Each structure stands twice: as C-alpha cells, then as structure tokens.
Image 1: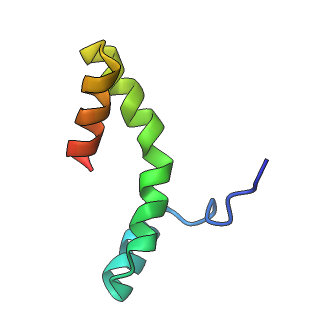
Image 2: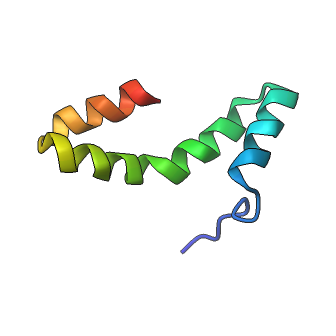
Length: 60
C-alpha cells in the first residue's frame, strides 16, 4: 500500500498552493481525495453507475 505524501496537507492548503502556483497537480490531489466519496453519494441517489459517474464528472 502506497503512503499518501500529501496526507498532512489540508484541503485549504492545497487550494492555496493551487492559487499561488496555478499548478493543476494540487487540484488533482483534491480530486483523488473526494472522487470515491462523491461517487458513493451519487450512487446513493441515482442508483445507476453510469449516471453516477457522469454526475461526478460534471461536479468536478
């Protein structure tokens, strides 16, 4: 299991680093953190995997 080197950086700090550097990698870390959680919420309400994936894509 690989260790997340960014686990000690808060979401707020990631956003601040993005705004300072305009480096999309900081946003990618947030995407990785929340994609599965958001997908789970979408599945709960939409009940269809394809619809839930589309919803997650639209949100991000």
